[in-house]
Length: 145
Image (cartoon, rainbow, N blue to C red):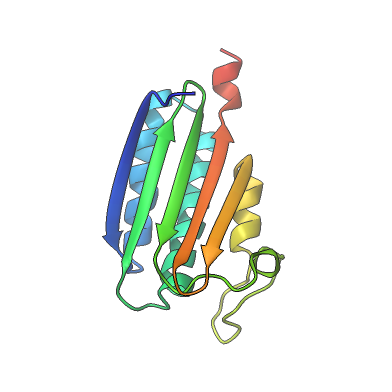
């Protein structure tokens, strides 16, 4: 299926860019006229994915985070990727409450949050080369129209 619109955004791995990415994703997805709840779901999932790239991918060092969004008639595909340290064990990282940084005040719920607010997520990673998280969401409100 061909997207009806798409965009790509690159930004530095600075923590204050997490809110920027969230707002950009919400503005882009707004073209489809989803409900406020659906828009909030997307914003929350993007926040988690971008935060993971910054904190875990680059470990708060400088790098580039890329966000790609593809809009379809009633859905969105959002990919957040980094070229950071990568994930050794994706299945372990996706377990609720697992964190590779127990010294930080992080709950280890990033992937769980993404999975609960989006229809599905796909994680690809290679140690030393980076991680990509692709999230999919169908807007039920648009199907019902």
